[in-house]
Every structure is written in structure tokens, then in C-alpha cells.
Length: 119
Image 1 (cartoon, rainbow, N blue to C red):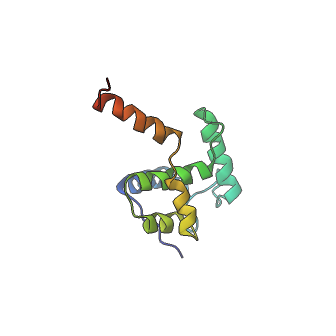
Image 2: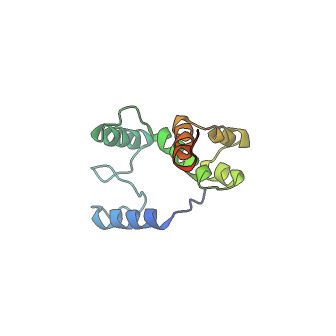
Image 3: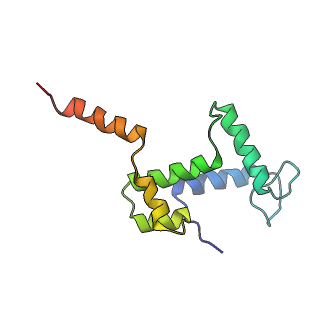
């Protein structure tokens, strides 16, 4: 069994979920409308609905994983720790997230416009 560290925000959200969950099913944490365990496909379907509702049709569950990994690296988390949390088998897989994206490049250029004046 893998250990999943959780921050305070996630623990708080999960506690709130348990308070409104209409089931005593202790074998599964996330349940379908019928009170049965959600399958992987069911979770994907739910997230697809959520992404569509907030006008993010091109996002996927993998997008969340990518954001999680990138945010950890941007926060200065050690590469080996990020690899473990992301469940990457190779550090090279994790290292690909170090490549700056368009947002990173724009941010870097925007930062110099207020810090430095060029003649």
C-alpha cells in the first residue's frame, strides 16, 4: 500500500466530504450515486464533467498530475521527492517537468520589465 501525504487543505476538504457523504460504506472512500465504489472510469467521467462545467474542455486528470508535479518543482521541492510523489519510475521522467513552459517564459520576461529599465 502506498502512503499519500496530504496537506491541511486536502485533509480539510476530505473531512468536509465525509460529513456530507450519504453512505456508511467503509470499504470505499469515493462513491457513485448508488453508494458503490467509483471505478477509475467513473472518476474520469466525473472529472470530465467538472472540467466541462468550468470551461476547461482540454484538461484531463493527467493535467492535474502535471500541475501537481510542476507546482512542487516551482516551489523548490527536491527532484527525488517530486519523483516519488509523482510515482515516476525514472528521474528523467520528472526532469522533463523542469523544462520551462510558455507561462514560465512569459513570467521571466514580465519580471524584468518592472525590475530593470533599459535605455
